[in-house]
Image (cartoon, rainbow, N blue to C red; front, side, top):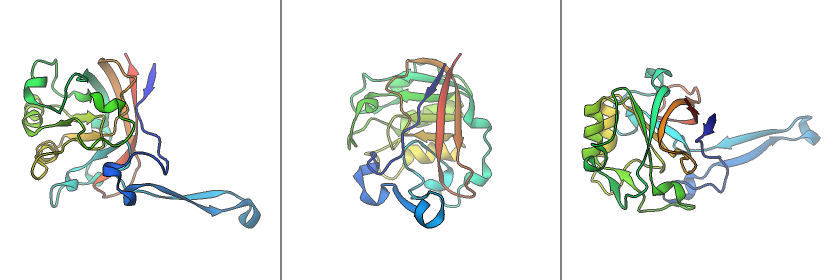
Length: 205
């Protein structure tokens, strides 16, 4: 069974901190009356909806999309249900979980049920990020438009991205049960950028 965990992109969608400049816009660029066809231009931030971050996002001179292959974005994944957590994901919250080397872990939290942007979204703290790095995961995903908040600087990003670990933000996990899956996370093929929108799906084994 295939589960689509991708946000729909539209002008009224939830964006980070409700910033107007981050809202995608659609403009009709050709009409049947004038051009014989219908076409649409889209303008949007690369961190819109379901997307992946590359090191350049927070690390000066970091790697970009041109330095990465699809290999870490396709393969074993595990969804962990952490909907009981109130503020953040700490090391203590995940060190008992069956996180395996080379896993792409997806954290389902109460973020999945927010209908608007929640400034107090559940995030992954820096100690948890360090633990995930130690476990040797290949990717970390969360059901919020950011993987961290309320930390000076961006240590969670720096720890994960600095270790070559893919960050997936904006995963739609409300209807996804905890367990193992096969992840297919396919980004747009845009050269040399710090983030890319993706179509992400989970396949039940």
